[in-house]
Image: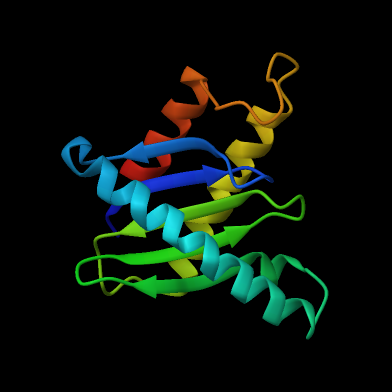
Length: 137
């Protein structure tokens, strides 16, 4: 599983953190991330009529594929959105779900930092190193 980009989007659809393994393609990934927000609304609205949010429903699965990437989504109970763009077209949902849950735990730690200002970009070296550790392992 090759993560080429990871984004955390706030409750107001503002980008809080964007990791990009290919800096030369950053604009393309930002476009894909922005495009994925519509899929979040669509999936959340269709799920909310069927069930209440549970640990299982936090992982939204494949939001949409592109020619070379697959875009997966995860939404927290507090409406933070995690978007993972993979270069691997054969990744299993279970693996991606586990990875996004681990990013969710990192996000919780960052948000619980008393020096973090709500809805501001996450600019923590510890958070970034945690993301890199999860991606590279």
